[in-house]
Length: 114
Image: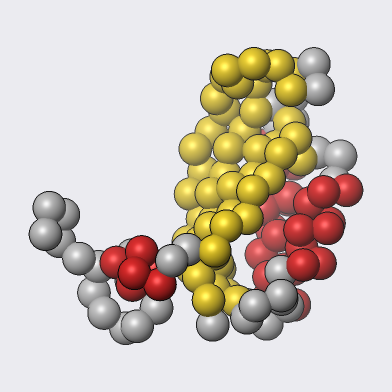
């Protein structure tokens, strides 16, 4: 399995329950693809540096996901089509960074400054 980081920016006009529903759908799609969501970090509402689709505020969520290569293609397509998602970005974490975060390799996260 490979480690990925997924950042999703939901429309800032949505209420908390709608955003949570979107997060739950992402979790379900990851599990359906045979993956595992290691962590979910809600950053809350943040102001954009510039307007995106005439919006100036978005609700940021960052997820750490473990999945096989290509397994998250359907999820990315669904996020691209979702009306409540302003932007998303899925990146593969380098193995060294994934091991440092404790996502792969079974090693404990490295000490800060080491």
